[in-house]
Image (cartoon, rainbow over all chains, first blue to last red; front, side, top):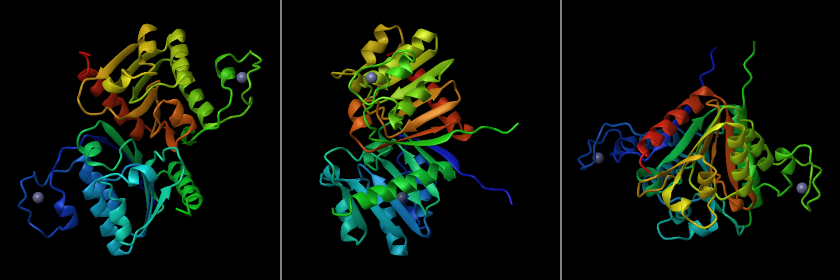
Length: 173
Length: 173
Ligand SMILES: [Zn+2]
Ligand SMILES: [Zn+2]
């Protein structure tokens, strides 16, 4: 049985297109954005929405409403979500961390004075999404950014270990 | 002949230790920092110093003096270096971009109004170093950061393509 391997690279900025059908496939959307186009951002959303059991998210800046919607959708489906964020950024205007908390998602904030500068997610303990991209609107649609999506265990396992370590380390906040 | 694969993950902050022996192996250093200890940062430096033919560097913030020294050392050895940096960050206090330029290294700055937020290097068109880590002192020694080091062609080749694309796109600056 051949092993199917995922090793993808996504570059940004991503063109702004409608991603409504990723959330509501049966809806015929009439918004003014372009439809039916696959972009780096829609591919990122698809990888996130592919989660079936868990998602561990370790992210410095999280203000992107579509990405927040994807996480809320996973939570609604019963996917176990853990979010680790930077204390200072979580408090700024536009941060979605409060939205996640109010939805009942388990969020911990890094309690150090230094930056928790990671931008990675681990889907189903199997798929790593990591790179330069913060989960903000300007990172997705304005900046030059990269994301790697891989299920290579040599890369995924250390990130799982580091997430668990940071999660335990910040269990008071 | 089995294929040797590199798939490493380095986490930061990295303990501050002496890295002098990476630059001058024969020197017996007497500085007050700890010696003979391998850290994430010394491993990063080793990967950079392993370049024998080329290094393409695409980095938002570059102010780390030890990393600058490594790039200058490669340049001295005849390694072909191309550096792409963010225009705004390159101009700030402590940026090493001017040092590289004055040493005769080919540097181009991103001319867009948005951020060139990448933090990656490609060594000898073969080894990719990428992650959340900017090449600054605080990123290396204070922040929580990650770097992936891989020679997986499915990951390396897109970064080579993106570097070449950005390099050509910014050929006027
Ligand atoms: Zn629409
Ligand atoms: Zn020393």
